[in-house]
Image (cartoon, rainbow, N blue to C red; front, side):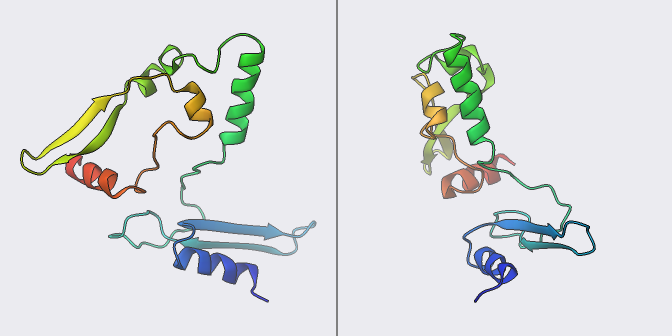
Length: 145
């Protein structure tokens, strides 16, 4: 049987997860274990090992709590699921959509969003991506500094 540490090591080495910190202890804390796995960033260029106390991206860990909070707001009549997010999060609503890059003009192709995205945010179909997960997004970030 594969140990828990081996499973984390393998998951990080094969790219299934970028990094993790495994912490365990017994009830009276006479035994504690703290071990980091993986790399600091998703970048292919930087393979610096993560440390136990590094700050990590939490990705989807808040989705459940956010969904519950939004549905409570809907239940109380404060918002509707088809309301435009611009009323609540104007900075998010102002984000442009990266569609591509014109290699002839060397310009980025960006467009304004056209529709409300509250419900899309809850169903993870809003078009937002995690930094580093898209080759086009990595190229854009590199060019923009």
